[in-house]
Image (cartoon, rainbow, N blue to C red; front, side, top):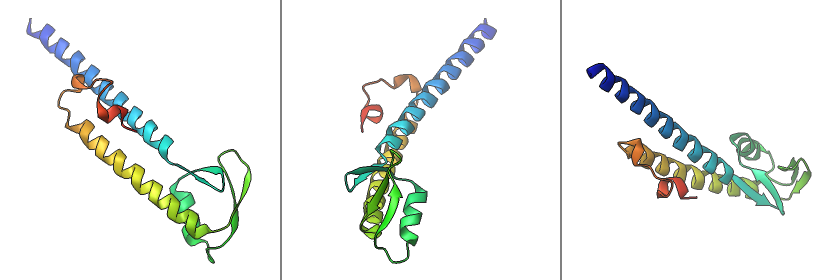
Length: 122
């Protein structure tokens, strides 16, 4: 009988790990979708590379970038766009970190419900 209980416990642990990983990936996808800004009426995905490029642009004035839809866009101020990217990055990363910490606190992953604020909070 103990072999059966051990087997059942292992299957439950495996399911809980899968549920946790699903919740973690859903949180990651949700937060990555939020890493966008609009500038000049065009949409840009905020990445480390974009922020680094904007930070190193020598004269912090105008330049051309490719938006999320592969269109060239005139940027009148690299500095202003960099500040907007940084603000969005910090906002999303802070939310992501806080929600991830809440997700880790749940002792039994089976307690997670689709209505939990950790999962639905955008």
